[in-house]
Length: 211
Ligand SMILES: Cc1cc2nc3c(=O)[nH]c(=O)nc-3n(C[C@H](O)[C@H](O)[C@H](O)COP(=O)(O)OP(=O)(O)OC[C@H]3O[C@@H](n4cnc5c(N)ncnc54)[C@H](O)[C@@H]3O)c2cc1C
Image (cartoon, rainbow, N blue to C red; front, side):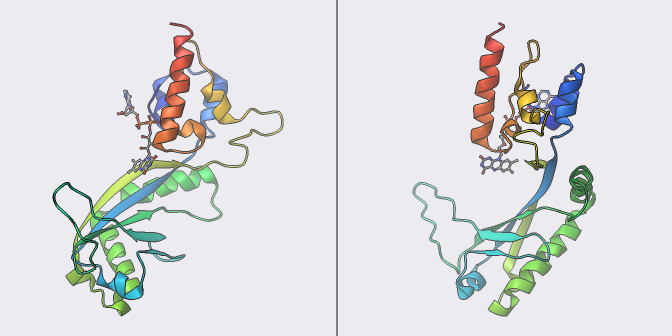
């Protein structure tokens, strides 16, 4: 089973209770990825920054992307030229239990219209960069949103090493169940390509034991 755990746990319908209990401890936070095309990035250059991090407002960081390199088409890293900005936006709610927090955040992610997210991004950029000459109306060329429902596993205490008398949930799910092995990225506690490859290699070896 190479699909993410939030899918795999439903596809394998006869999972034993120990796996069901272990999967119930996998919580995934969502992320809105916003790519904002700007006609220029002079305001960043004026401030002497290529990225910004903030602790209130919409999102928490933005960074300027290095222009894509294409053979034979040099793209100078020049503040007066167009560029892409990337925002990763989570929707944390401090103090709310982890399961309600992650599902509530998904509700916000999928329940918010494009135009509402667009206005929030525009306001955030205007507030941060306006004094350096940025004008959202003039300088933003386009915005693309990707709504990523299960972006990052959010491991709680006990996730990696278990609790007294209880195996870690990722150790439970990593065990082969009959002819089925689970080999998706968050079984390492992180969602990344390298971890996905590592877990799939382990799962494949387990399956080869019984084929
Ligand atoms: C926007 C974005 C940016 C990322 N950036 C990075 C990065 O910079 N660096 C990095 O290392 N990682 C990054 N990742 C994470 C990385 O891509 C994933 O963690 C990794 O690809 C997950 O691999 P996987 O094999 O576990 O699952 P996936 O690659 O999601 O594969 C699961 C497969 O299962 C299929 N599937 C689902 N349901 C079923 C079903 N019912 N029946 C049959 N097939 C099904 C899906 O179609 C999919 O092909 C990013 C991910 C996203 C979405």
